[in-house]
Amino acid sequence: MKTSIVIPTWEAKGRGVELLTSLFGSIKRQTYSDYEVVVSDHSEGDGIKNFCDNHELDILYIKIPKIEVIAQ
Image (cartoon, rainbow, N blue to C red; front, side, top):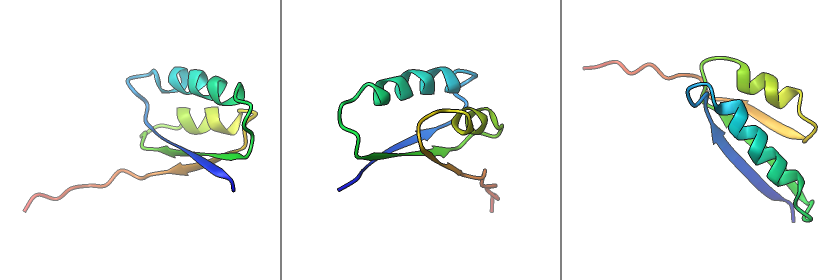
């Protein structure tokens, strides 16, 4: 059975890619290999997406759009 590694992320004040670099490195060092990586990105920019698109891990990237809250 495949295990899902689900990573909610955002820009983290410019440190998002740095944090993902460390996390992806840790995932790649594991001996267990029956997994999928899912990144749920809550960032406004495309830095996280670009990083995931250019990484050697097989990543399912999901962009979560910003939701506007209307005060009543």
